[in-house]
Length: 404
Image (cartoon, rainbow, N blue to C red; front, side):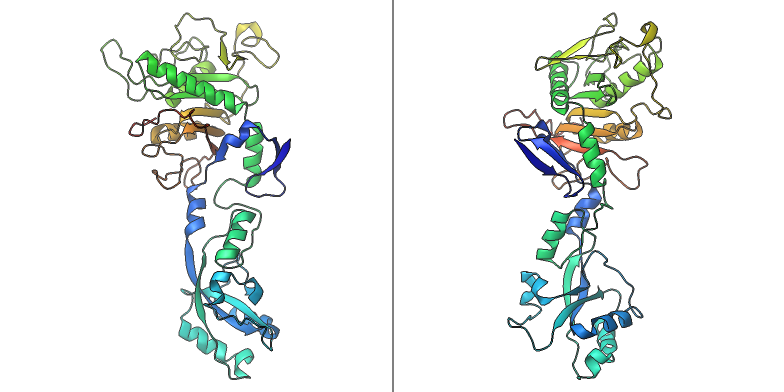
């Protein structure tokens, strides 16, 4: 059985998913701007005018107020006014003798009500009958809707809105759908991140956080790292920066530079081997099993281990960025440090399991730090992000007061 799964209500971007598809567990994160756009309103003037004079009134208003609020209907029939405004606008229950339209004039900051009233009185629509304009103030969304569903909601709550099939406050719907289709086995990779997190905690050398980095072009697992901040060096010191995501990025760097060059000598992970705390002498080719499924590392897409002549092939043209467009799967929402490291490494997408309301830096929702670092206009890179909603009883420990 297949069902239609429509992201951002973009009609051109519809995915057909099986009813039991694991992709239903992926909840796209809203950007900080999307959240603000959904709740911010401004006060505007509206006035009923004769429908036969609508064009003349609109043309005259352009001379004194700027054209704005393109995401809202300027002229609305009484039957399309939201129920919440019917009594306030004193809309008659029976049709009047003359057809009336409600004109959305402008924000109240553009002109005073007195000046607007004086201007409208001079127009033929009011001066010929001696009618005094009935100017009212209503609250409307200040930003355009990011989906057809949101436009419908606003039209029923505030004022008839227009959805222009785009998203100025976050990733375009087509980007979200395309990235979603490109995710490589997200369920098993999230499970692997959780397993690595469990191993990190049980080792006593780290906390229960895990990270997995996958190349979407080949399906390879490039790195699988657990937290290691509690592991002591020869001086007996730990490293508070050895978070799972940071170590996974290190592993990718080591793979790309070559086995002879160790980027971080204190990060004791064999270059060709991304699994948590493997011995230096471990075999270059390892198999990670998740739910019985094998994932062979360090093989090219033709099955040749480490490419020709036993050397790893790195043909990525990405201007030197370590994780350009790679996929990252995390057991927990990353902290500010790890989120910015992922951003500066130019990752393509991130999926995390447990939300960290006190320390996480990717979610912009209420109840947390509301940073939304995955998509901020002032930053020089953006990526698409999802939270993996685990089934009841499968959630990991949150470690609420700790940076993941």
